[in-house]
Length: 265
Image (cartoon, rainbow, N blue to C red; front, side, top):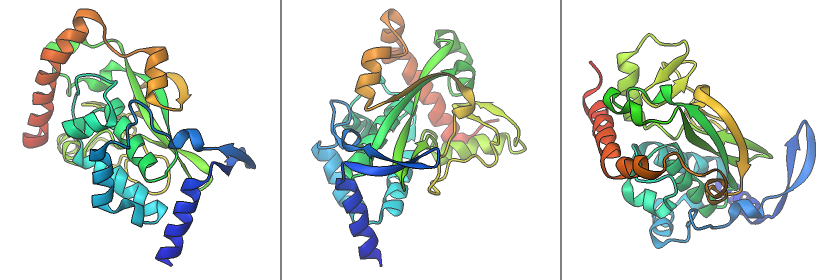
């Protein structure tokens, strides 16, 4: 049975046209664009291919493979701030940490590497959800609206939103421990959810989220992040970009590491 599921998964992965569910009506959709490499989605990079082979993700059925890739990016690639949103997937893997945009680039690359169609969905989020993760004394440098994204995958005939990968479980557990009674709307520390105690950030074959409640603007879907950043741009420019890259993000990452290790008082 496992071999049969695996063969079905691989057959779907190699298909360029499939039937998708839209408003309850089956339509033919060409998925080939969502399986390609790009400058940022560089899943042919030796480090990414080595990871995929070592983990054996291609040997699993589709549901299990998606879950394994998802949890790898969520928990092994820690929440943190990279030098730029436009890093290649291989660079994010090398860093070993990231935020919504950079971890999403790696997640897309890994999904495409195992034959799961994946695309980019761009937004902005209110900067208030970053309070706590970004220390108060640095918050004046944060733009009011911050570029945000999640990954969408094509699974069992429909596109699913995948956003729960952003916050690693160890960091999340420290925030939950401090605000244990929160099952109303919660926003802060890189999280925006309607129930902090039980966020919908697990892979169960459905959409999942961890920052959705902070979304302000919706830019729609793109084939890859390269296309989005080429059109919309990134969060910071000029002196603020330089300061973020060489000074501010290191202070932010130190704060995040401290929360992950020691929790909140």
